[in-house]
Length: 312
Image 1 (cartoon, rainbow, N blue to C red):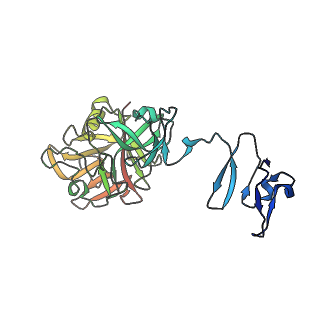
Image 2 (cartoon, one colour):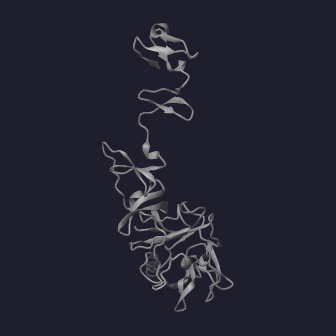
Image 3 (spheres, rainbow, N blue to C red):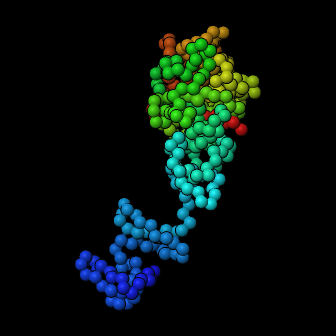
């Protein structure tokens, strides 16, 4: 790969002191003669980029795929776009970036994306399952049995679920601050997905999850309305099997036997029949069967209870 140079250019030799003119180098110099170049398989149109970590110049294709960058997200690319740091998303975006509907993210990169949810664009943790995109609306690594009430997830007057620990952009703040966050805002959703995941900022764990797809439309709607903050706590009998799908285990979202319960928030209980036992998914803060569980194991920083929703 020859480099053409002007006739009066001088080159510093490896000894650090000797300078030679182009006439001494027979009018050309090769990158193989320079110690801070690492040229591999040169091809037409490649560019050189400096690798500061290793102290060398490397050849790269001109058409680099910037959409593969892990800390950037792009949409609606236009001529002249610039990279802009979006602190709410904690990512770089192009200056023409237009936040998309959740459906438009499918097939893209999982993680924090700007989603129009509840009438506002906000950063949300997005993941993909069963041919759809899902956005996280509740996450908790708080293993205290009374967490839903201590943290203020539950409105003590209305017994409705309410938003808790949101960041300045009205997304879940627990990824960087606190141990739990709830986003309960009006949004027309079609399904919920409950999962036990290995960290607070990870995505859907398909090895430990359940959803509402087996339910009647009326029972499903009650779940959807509750987690959107629209209705008070409720109970349903025979809502789930322990591993998902239809089964003989019940749901008690702060409500049982006609009365508000300030110690029971069980998406799925563990006893078949009128008794509830400890939660398999959820929280119970009283009695001998109290606990904080996600997929039957204690909620912690490595077994996080999470709820994702989809709106299409």
